[in-house]
Length: 408
Ligand SMILES: Cc1cc2nc3c(=O)[nH]c(=O)nc-3n(C[C@H](O)[C@H](O)[C@H](O)COP(=O)(O)OP(=O)(O)OC[C@H]3O[C@@H](n4cnc5c(N)ncnc54)[C@H](O)[C@@H]3O)c2cc1C
Image 1: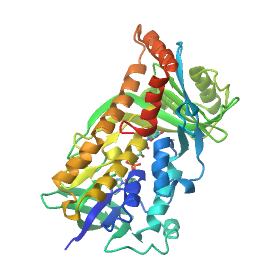
Image 2: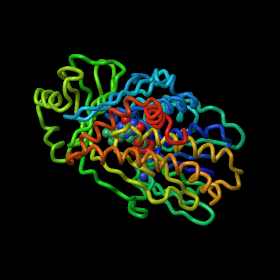
Image 3: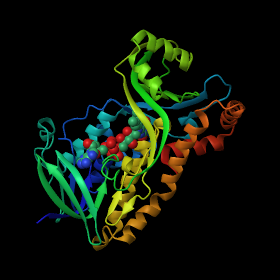
Image 4: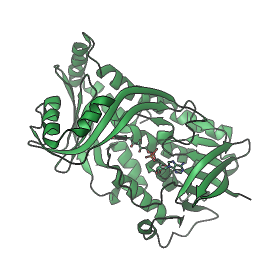
């Protein structure tokens, strides 16, 4: 007999963990299955989080506990070799910051600690198990159970419930749920429900860099025909995201440090002076992946499982946390017997339609518009950036979209 839950969350990454936290006091029986063993993450990428995301993390009680956060007060947007630039500033919007930079691992570990502290944990790594020796008492019949080393192998959706199969220590297991939430980053349903994929032909190199004249609090987004390059202010320097064709990125990964720093200076220009140091480099292929449907009978796709975006505008997790937050609100509003019903799932889809479509369009449009050297387009883009800089309401519109999404 398989055990039955109200909700099974597949994937304890930042989005799945956000949902588990938002529903921890819901009184529902929730099980989170994570393929890893809950050891702290060592993922090297840095994330730019919007001010709106900070507010949500605050409400979940996680923000104040996150270490190593740097604020963004200005975003400087320009294109290589052309006039015209725009500067978005927090003070023009009456916000303390436009956004924040922190390592993915710090965010993931902060969310994971909070989830594990509220849960009964099975299959945790040694260090994480120590984080939650005494799970909080559970109110009502509700319960949050986190199972590590639990790689989900199949999801079957049916008229009455979803069936989730997973493997733990080589043993096949099965659960059923009124609602299965797929927050696995996009792998589980790739074959059975293929996403629409647009390959930009680009990869991104990420690394921490230091420079001669850092401008604390200022993020730079520079568009070039080979792809965007971003510098996110972080501690003594910047988190770099440098995009180029897959072949160019392979070469960039092999450059020695002096060559890397000199080529970066050549490519980015002189706004922060010469680059003086670079930490370990990693690379990622960059694609837009969009699930054709974000709901299936008794199941919903969240975060990267629903849409994987190019990191140009730093929207991926910011969109994923809004998916998780909105789903939690819909679940909390729904009558328990309607959990996972077509009406509840329609309610969720409606609430995310505008923000999801606008976020995908915005990010995809930026990459396509700026990653080319078509005659005449460079001048038009430069003129648009300069114009945007002179029209405060237009600037506010763009900045608010980046901070809060289209529903903001
Ligand atoms: C280079 C780069 C830079 C980025 N920069 C930004 C940025 O500046 N701002 C921003 O907002 N976003 C950014 N993103 C996007 C951001 O990283 C993602 O949107 C975010 O990680 C999505 O979280 P998620 O929880 O949906 O998926 P993931 O982070 O992929 O987590 C998925 C989780 O599910 C688990 N899992 C996978 N398969 C299974 C399975 N079968 N069973 C059980 N568990 C499973 C995994 O172990 C993992 O813990 C960037 C991405 C890249 C690649």
